[in-house]
Image (cartoon, rainbow, N blue to C red; front, top):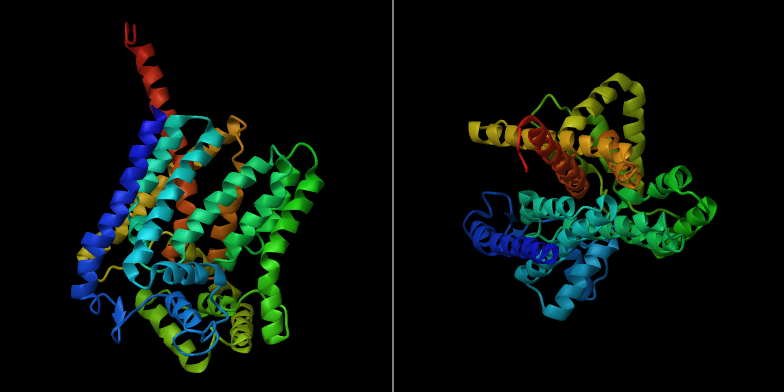
Amino acid sequence: MSRRWILLVLGLALSLRLGYCLFVFAPLLEKKGEELGWVVDGRFAVDPYDSIARNVLAGKGYVDETGRRNLERLPLYTYFLVLTYKVFGSGLWKVQVLQSLLDTMSCFLIFRVGLKIFRDQTVALLAAALYAVYFKMIVTVARPETETLYVFLLLAFLLIFVGSFAKTGLAFLSGIALGLVTLVKPITLLFPLVAAGLYLFRARVRRGKRILLFISGFLVTIFPQLMHNYLAEARVFYSSGGGKMLYMGAVIDYSRNFREEESRLIREINSRYSFSNSLEDDNTLRKMAVRSILKDPLAFLKRIAVRVYLFWTYPDYSTPMMALKTILILLFNGLLLALAAFGFYLSRNRRLLYEPFLGLFLYVYSVYVITYSYSRYSLPLFPILFMFSSYGVVHLVKTSGSLRQKLIPGKGE
């Protein structure tokens, strides 16, 4: 029965994603692409992964549309696009099909992880179904951006990482999996420190060996990127762009319209610095950010408080319809967070292995709140929220059913 249900959920996930790309995104791109900001100067406007991939295939090297080497964008998603274009040919629809398939596999991984942690098919199926119909992930597969691959690799990492608490040998493979995640986005670069703490706190035996294996697997995976950057710049660094993020988070004026203020800052930085391509410029922005924070730490703390909220929505109150959309998203995310918190509480009381999920959630959330928050950055955390909120919902339903049986004579007989 569970096999039939998960196949239905996966079919629904794939159908919704392909349907959106074909029947919603494609007509909008053709008719209102420029108006919506999806097309700029006749070019599909996305993060520069697409242009870098095309330049790599053309033999121009790892350069973006400016013709300069891009030090900000990490290579794994770029080479996912390179492989796609090389094997299947160029064309946005081909990327959309592959990303729809990949995101459907993420849906299956949510089911597998949920089953492993909660040992309850209903919880695992509900979490997978929530992800299958989650509109933001459906929308994301239509563009050549990192989230689809990132979420898939993050879930694969969590599945292996959880298994490593029972089988020491999986710790090395888990470190490799996290390394692959970090080759898509650098946000998890310091997560091995959290993983080491989780092994010390929760693993029963061979804690030191698990930590050593995990960190070894992680370093083996990211070492080529470090060596590549050293050979190119004669210094060890992982990627640029962190200074820009910290600078924007330190100086942005949240009293203004968020969209307009963010665009103004980006234009200002672009006019003075080459933050995607110059490590020196990125370091300069980082130093400016630190000076700004030290000059007025209270103002920076206030910005952090705003980012706690901004992480979960892109605020737009320009029209009544956009204001309603913003409020509805906030209400949905607030309810999901409350149910997930209840699920974590139940997991703690029942001694389930919830710590890896809570640790990853708090780590990612904290880094973005301290530096710079944007609602798109919260997407990879929704599988965790769906799993633990599903656990809370199923518990509430079962509890209410048991309560009705006790209160209503003859119920269930």
